Length: 77
Image (cartoon, rainbow, N blue to C red; front, side, top):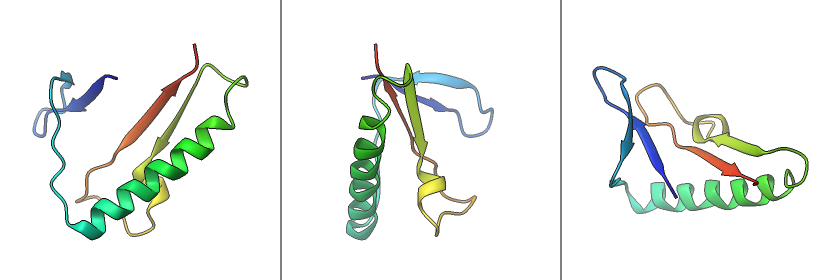
């Protein structure tokens, strides 16, 4: 597993050594639901493509520009 991100002010792309998620229990449940959706969705793409990706912002109808987007990339090598 590798975790990537952008610096807040410069938007410079960096590899992260560690990532922390600060959220409420409701938000945590929603992230878990998103990851379950991603797992099921990406499994359907195995054998059809080299990789698949999903954005939290596309999945969550309540997401707005002030929130962080979580992007999950699955590689099928």
